[in-house]
Image (cartoon, rainbow, N blue to C red; front, side):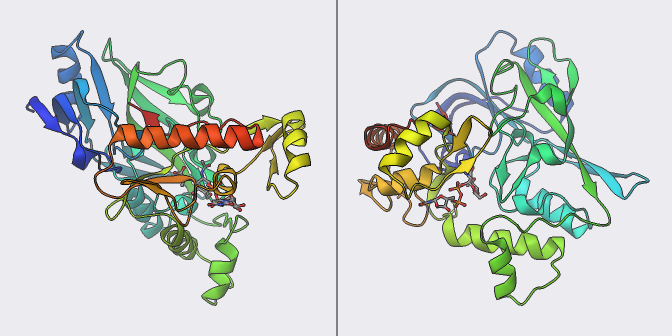
Length: 337
Ligand code: EPU
């Protein structure tokens, strides 16, 4: 375990942005993590997982700890379920495929999401009608100041749409080391109700889909809409879909009656930010090497040599244009560093 100085982060962020860490260390076990935290007590820290949800606008003037702890275990329960524990550094999509190969159902709708297991609870990742909170049992996390491990139950994580306690009250206080999911070993609950999944399955002549079929369908849909970070730097959805009050919605809807929307509660409505951005004229637009993906307006892309600041400027321009046109504020989903 070596602390490296002035370390390049280009390979560690899916936007492919050039930035440097003042210091960098990769930890491969919980013991190594304890050791680093003990030895560097008091230092400014930055915790890095898969780097798939951040926009680096500057160098990181801190010790970057890259959590690269691997391992998975399956514990079968008696009632047709199994508890699967994965260490934080496992790649998310590889973990989803591992579960499917072991006939464990529940994560298939979350196929091909970039990033690592340990960061999935932080923003309660979700796609195609599923969020990790649906199968989440608990996670283990180390308190930075004391190096004590603590188990967080689902309730304690306070999950909400792209939110958890780790983004709120406990931000910067804990490092997630492992996550446990409860998955089905039989009678899998196949969920094809969202978006294009059913159409994709029908196209392939599949009538009774398996979890593998659903995973393949989600993978195909994501590949058709979302750019592969290996080919085109991006961080998935750059913005959250705004949840607005029914009054705000009525006002906007009166002027834009084609606005798609989903009821969240009696008093709240969710509007797809991708639609707002597209209507504001940004879909497929490009400013130097910073752009808005042509197939999904929610995704900002780096065509090669964009800087984090250029992408941030573009995101602000989008936010103010959407606000002006629709009176709706959209918030970044990615962490701006
Ligand atoms: N839309 C447009 N133009 C666009 C994009 C979207 O008009 O360019 C409208 C359409 O009306 C479409 C609706 O937005 O019906 C919803 O689009 P889609 O189903 O593609 O989903 P999304 O709301 O754009 C969310 C997640 C994605 C996730 C998909 C599928 C957020 C912020 N994003 O996107 O998550 O894959 O649903 O479930 O909630 C991510 O977080 O990185 C991510 C990719």
